[in-house]
Length: 413
Ligand code: GAF
Image (cartoon, rainbow, N blue to C red; front, side, top):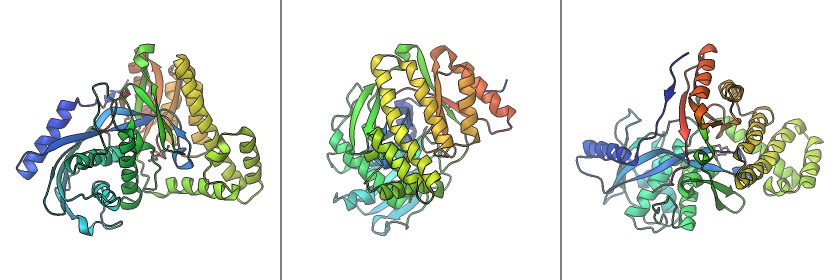
């Protein structure tokens, strides 16, 4: 068998120290503070957020750390331990959509979107370090945006982020909802990635020890207790290392298909047909009769069924029958693979191998086309399932995957 690579989360002190040390070495002074924000895995409810649907992410213990100080001018200087490009400098006056490229767009985009929302935000110096695997479908971009959002909130007394208590719960969810929308604007308009809002909500509004039941129709959230260890279980994350990007066209195409289907059905979002099985059946029949009927039926069927699966998952958690979520996870993956067509060879191999090695359920998580899969496994089976997946990747001649164990961590703060 091959070596298994793990990606552990840093503890908070280590993350903060790293960002602080980078800041001091680059700018020659100490930062005003260090803020951080988590990546996420979505338990279920994939490609539902931009359809007004339900999603159920948890915040990862893996976080992005931002050491930041205010400046008196409108210059943003930024450096990241993960980027070899050195210090970048952008004037906020020049920061309009399309003008800032690469990772800086996510950072500067948050300042731009805050200004667009009427907040008096000026320049700042920033140093980033992160243990959220980059480009792994674990929301490294939302973690970056959210870390900057809570930093600017604190440095400019915007009063939106509130605090996070000792139990890992945010005190001001309404303010964080506003910050999440700011981050979505940064990502959609400055970075040009047409994503929904799940990742930013997870990073800013999640609660430690809980999954975040996010209703994307009205933006409301519920915190659902999620403590796998108490049930002798664990959530294994497989980062396939197959590269994905939501700036590229496939994600936008899926979103456009859903919007086209909603337009033909005369509804604002597909959620409107999802909650009523008869309306859903009528909608699918109507779409089948039109142009591109087969494609739109498969896309809409995924969204409708996936929203129902979120409810099923939450019901099982509520009754304490946690392994009972397995079939919903499996069905979610199969639907993303066959109907929504966003899986890939690496994700399918990770999922199939985890299932064959005893996982109660397994699925891709996040937008797909690469990225990560999750598997619900007995706590004592974590190493064995990871080994089986690593061996399967080696046998298939694929890049070695990396593994993590996900527990529900606290939100940005
Ligand atoms: C990506 C997007 F950023 C989210 O908004 C969501 O659509 C997800 O893919 C799919 O559920 O993470």
